[in-house]
Amino acid sequence: MKKTVATLADGRELIYYDSGDDTVRTAVDPRPLTPVVSRSEIRRDALTGDDVAVASHRQARTYLPPADACPLCPSRDGRESEVPEESYEVVVFENRFPSLSGGVGRCEVVCFTDDHTASFADLTEERVALVLDAWTDRTATLSALPGVEQVYCFENRGQEIGVTLPHAHGQIYAFPYVAPRTAAMRRRVDEHRAETGRNLFDDVVARERADGERVVLETEHWIAFVPYAAHWPYEVHLHPKRRVPDLLALDGAARTEFAQVYLELLRRFDRIFGPDEPPTPYIAAWHQAPFTDGRREDFGLHLELFTVRRASGKLKYLAGTESGMGAFMNDVRPEDAARRLREVASA
Image (cartoon, helix red, strand yellow):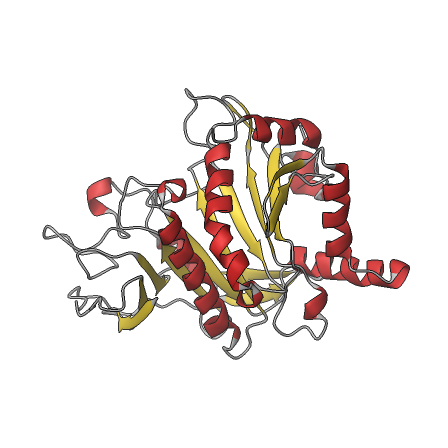
């Protein structure tokens, strides 16, 4: 992998990740940009203890532009974008409209391909491996920034999820706090250790392997299953079989096998509802241990993949119980979801 660091016209950092060591990146951003004033603030919810980012400047961010004005496509044919080069493999840059900024974290955009019409599932295994290298490199870099406690790599796909740019991309958030879901997992890990003397992530994976009914696929180094108490209609958790706290700790064998496993899961998601259904909207979320946690070796890196589509033409809305009380009601039995995801396996 070759990494090339550049600067956009308004001072934001941009990083190219290329598979070939001989790739040269020299294009300069010609746009007359002025720095965006983006001062986020973190406020603490007194009743729950949750941290909330207030970022009112994001109201002006780009919203569903036409294809010929996509800011994530490369700059070519007389059109200037966020990426000055005429082509690219994987590129990462600071978000122009970040949720976290001004010394309270950082937000980055990750473009997986310069093909405007492609999705992550269309990538080659070699390109997915390069994306994994980029995620890992950014995790290492961002975790070293002052005040950063947790690095979160994720992808949103589909307007139903709230995506405002259809070009295949993800984001990376460097949180100045531990996100609520991670904090809850960490508490459960500690409670389980105190109750049993064992690791919670190890026991969850062992239980799913022993039961087998919710396992979607299993390889030498990875296992994917629908969790016993899934929140979402179709939800899969992907774990490396050797527990590690973060992407940096994945060994070479697991990294090599990841691309094949992840692409298979994404392609199955697109087949859940049949060939006539539009692409399945989803969120893919990497869960890594906080970098300020002295107990981080007990945390288990994993990826959670889920969709808000519960049936053909029907969405799972977070209504009164979920949005108001955080009490999830699942419309699909996890065992049925796992069975369907096994049925649509690639031939």
